[in-house]
Image 1: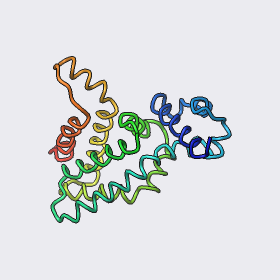
Image 2 (image 1 turned 180 degrees about the vertical axis):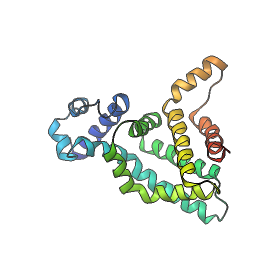
Image 3 (image 1 turned 30 degrees about the horizontal axis):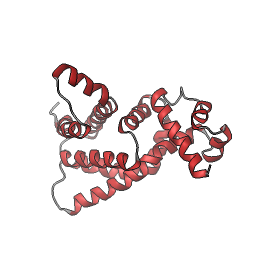
Image 4 (image 1 turned 45 degrees about the vertical axis):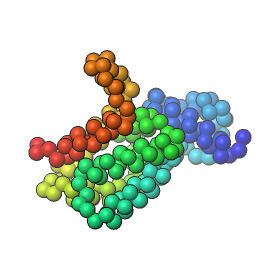
Length: 209
């Protein structure tokens, strides 16, 4: 087994187990047992459990951030007003395209994002801010510019209300879709759900509350 194979197997196992059980509830021994490697391999390739958690996020966030920056460059080069709807559409499309290209499960990654906020993982927030903060600030700045008149605190809360709704909807998509089918006899693909989510999420930002 090559080093690349070992790292990939550890990251795959960690991603699945963290999403299913949470960060604090998942031990390194459980991860290594699932990956079929010894504990020394985690220490050698990652150094610690915290760094392994960061690596799980980095595997998605690095290509996603690169693609989002390219999309924002393209949008701005078109010299047209960047509405909240257009920015959110770009965010969702880029995220889903990268997850598909990398072979990542969208619902699983959204569960990981939700856990990053609900479990005490201060190191993860610091890692994300230090590595991807400039790109986040650029997107948030463009979104704020598209919502003139909102004070910073109100914008902050509405942004997190929107992110919470997004994470819940995508991480629970199978369950929500099953309820839709049972109660209304209708079905919805993930793409159709995102198309419905864009105007709803934008409305949360625009709402005169």
